Length: 109
Length: 380
Image (cartoon, rainbow over all chains, first blue to last red; front, side, top):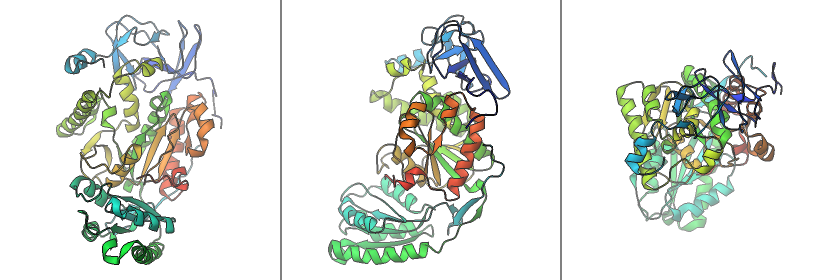
């Protein structure tokens, strides 16, 4: 089964039009292109570093303290300014609820 | 392959006014002590029957019995045969009478009354033969999609579940709900961090409170049992926060308003999206198939089941297995109904493939057998 257009050119997936991160569908090296479509929009971002399958990259600049959005929902807050094409993970994003959970249950959540 | 014209939904009209998409006869044991006889009957008449029952001995507990009654009244069953021993708390004749209250056809046999296994099997066989013959007279008729009730489960999940398979199923959910259909999932313990999101989707303040309470309960139980945290494997796989992991699970709910939290049984009165929460102590089985039984008790006709690793279990409902992991798909294709790997490979989009999965759901509702049915994965 092949699509009408751009077969195999998509290297990332966006789950909602408001997402500021995309998830890679394959391992990409620094300088690789993360290409994803959502609705009528296509996002094409050049990677600033090598990022693995299943990991996220910023599709536009995200400011420190801003929500990181996936599924159209906030998955956490940016711990620092993140440039488009940069890897987004535990080093620069943290659950906004982390402190609340830790206080409530005394566990790392 | 875009679908120009969807097949019509065809179902069996039942005495309660609703439709069934299958036409089985259920064999129900009331105690572990009658399970061997019930299983013998099931083995003797494997075509058109399903087996489930009360998972304990002498006891009678309301919660599992209520679930069994609701399951027995399910529209997939043209009739049921209850098989009891005679001295247990869950009396076979009483249970059959309760099941009949919905208009369902229910018969019973009791081993101590018939005189042992062999006589019970003989009499049970005659009853079953008659019920199966009667059931075979039912005919499918055209039914609006709005009458359809669908559940969604994920099991054997991996990175592709939250990323592709669940969002894909969620898109089908949105479309079903827009057509007036009913949709549900459960697993509140996998929705930690989703309380604000679900509450925001609730149709009113009371539903919002219910949703928060359901997640809060599950969260408390899980933390107290030391069951839940975001693990190293999750982090290595790319998941950054607990919310992200939970949203991947919630993605199979689609985006429509939350109509209610189901804590009891029976078909929800109006269409829309529901969170189902199993009543405490109601479980009669374990794992994902138990969730499928809970959906059945809430009137679901069929269920989506997304998997990344390749969970092969089914349940009493027709289960549509959806997989988006390309490597695993090659390995376990025999057990999968819908290949979502073109999305993972970047060849197709979620929206394109949602049309095909919707068409598959309609086909299954009209009678197309799923792999779990063909292989008789009727775990219950």
